[in-house]
Length: 305
Image 1 (cartoon, rainbow, N blue to C red):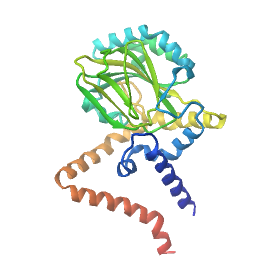
Image 2: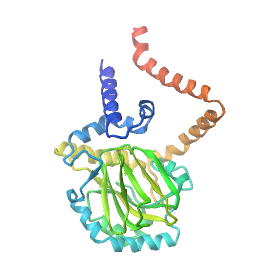
Image 3: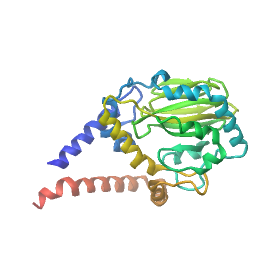
Image 4: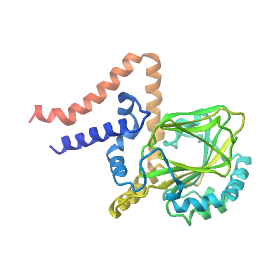
């Protein structure tokens, strides 16, 4: 009985996520999207959110962000120095499961903070920005990100609703052709200007200019209505999100999930090769595996009871 209740919770939560917003994945795409795995947790985050559940949220809800806005030139100067050294880059290994798919389309990053993980390279190369971040407890993750000229990030949802996304323009084209679209609403980056959005809505980004775009990118803790939900969010970030830590350089912490990701991705590469060679066989095996797991968990016990 318990497993059927758990299944029902997942199905109801996943359907809610799929119907959320004006821009939606197809049911099939959403079923296999990583955000579905977090659907029950995200449902609670939306239900107990003390800020509006909408694509863009006023930055006035977040006092720590005002400090970042006021120090944007200092942050920009460290980002510029890092960029000139080639420090903002894609990972050369399969050790960044959260952003691995973005690297092939011209996106790069340098981690300044990632939950409770250690990045000594950030403290060494960007000492002022990392020192500032230590004074801002609601900032859970932060990085410099680059979107190259004539590049694009595909439509996607981020998996976890316990945070909201903050972007601060540092070195941008200051052009409407360089933008992010969240649930059908566009925002164009400008130097020294910031925005907060809910990254669990479907969003994508494009840079159609001939100039680079570098921003300060951060995950800020979602304000919640109850103390126990805040404690749960802190626990989840510490235990799960920290495990997704990815290094900038040798000596930085690699989380447990990313240590496993390199091996799992090899299976994905083989699956993609099979899909390219024989799509019918690929989808047959995919559904055979999914239905087989469902049968073993939910049906088989009744047949052999």
